Image (cartoon, rainbow, N blue to C red; front, side, top):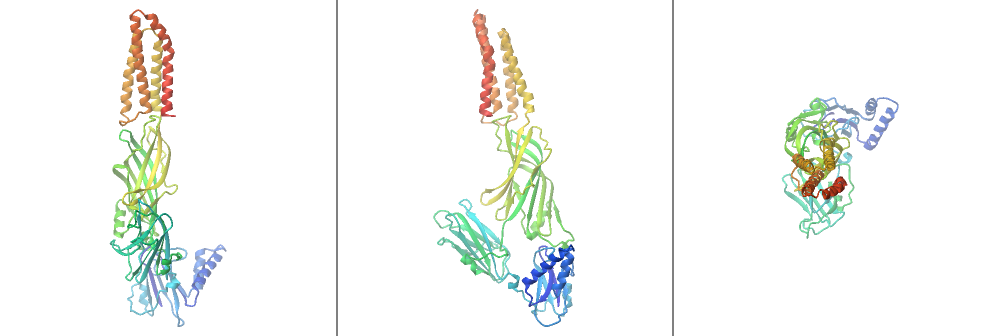
Length: 565
């Protein structure tokens, strides 16, 4: 007997083994691992123990005698009878994928892997022993009034299999319906479309097999108003018991469930914060991690243990494989995104990673300047999946997001950051990752350039009250008015044209208003002095010497309370 097995998809490294047909396969498996563990407990290399145990338990076996990782086995039959031919992946290196198996009697060309079939029946696939006589899978979900339908891709179905589906509501007023669609979107089977039952079932024979079939789940469209709620879905292959709703799930998967994509952002630098335009420019890295069995490969096909793609080559590779990858859009991005580096890595088992370093300008519409310059602002990087949640779901793994140690923005001090995942809805529901950080202003600039000079000006203005030269006092206070006007224009250049007052606006307006009142007050005192009533002016002025600072204290205290407290 000559046997040759090679993987045709995934990262399958096939191993073949031969035993007598009267062997209990479950006991064989249990005996194999118990012997290996017993040998390993003595301190020996488990791989050597595994090879010895394999020699003891099987009539013959092979792993890599063929080309690359292919298995090639030759066995001289010593007695007539039936045999089990087991094809699996090496216990020390679990792999998966489709395979091509050739079996020949007195046909040594099989060992070359390209023998021509003669049409003779030598072996058959024992579905019961394989554990795939039938398969059942259970899934749950929720339909809402905003998102009243969803769909599941079916994995490729072999010819001759029969597909079964059952759905029942578990909460709400949901009246569920089912539709099985072909790859072109054409409905080929349906269940409970009229909404006259509380559950829905359908059945379809895949006489010729099928790829890219879709099972759509929706709330009843013909009922009065949209129905919504949680549901439980059972699907099965060659499992009519599914229609009872009591079928037990097996290890085999039937649905191609959404792939989880771990995503994170490392913020390296903030090059600019434009308050007037309400945006900021950032240099950051996007990291993504996911696993797609359809991207798996056997290392012997490329003599490599990692496939690397740079630039747009990854997108081209995905297009060739007719697969999808978690493409995204930075939804609060303004203008172009300048990509500095872009690399994708694929491991043999389909574990994939994506890294992009970029510079771009991002909207910051959540700015609120009411407490300016004591304000703390929220900044976001929002990344939205271009595919609906039926394809990809973003997750937020711990440690994948971070802040750089030197962000390079002197005016702002970043106090904290956090990340979270939510969804956005339009025609579809798409997963969205949010990188959020808070920043407050470096107050040294405003204290040195504004608050200290303001305090000194107010003190100097107060000192002039000890003079009885009202003309000089008018000149000083009028000069202050011009200074406050200049300050107002200077600050307004940094901020957008707001429809509300800021803390700084209130401070400047208050000092401006008090200065105007002081000018008018000094003019009145000067008029009294000129008209010969200097004594009255002197008495009034004695009170204002202490009223003036008290007015500032009360006014500024009220502003602090209203804006900051």
